[in-house]
Amino acid sequence: MCIGLLLIASAAMGALVAEQAATFFDQTPKHWSRCSGQDNVSLDSRIESCTTMIDSFRAWKHKKSADALFQRGRAYHEKGDRERAIADLTLAYRMRIDPKLEKAICEFSHQADLSIFLCGARR
Image (cartoon, rainbow, N blue to C red):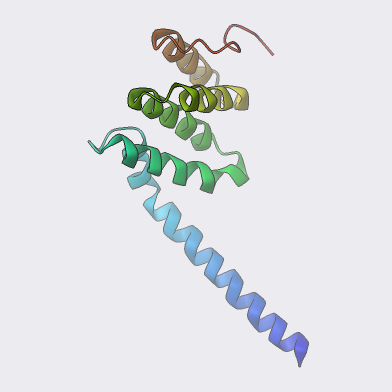
């Protein structure tokens, strides 16, 4: 009887997790357009959407996680939070998922006078 209850509970939890994942992925375009600044939303809304994406994609080390870190770093810079901007840009750079993103991070950090010490160093 206990095994039966565990199986039922396990199936219910699996269905709930799958439903939540499907809901998130259905909303990913909305989060991305906010995170990247395509929707003219406040910096706090951009940061919140980027954080949602980062937290959701981190388990998969998904490319969008690095992109969202880059975008959140840019938003923190625009907000005047230099330390958080550097932290996010550095983490995105260290993920080394996309050479084009690495270059964009370095270019932005130099233009924004955030000079990340990792830029210029190769693997």
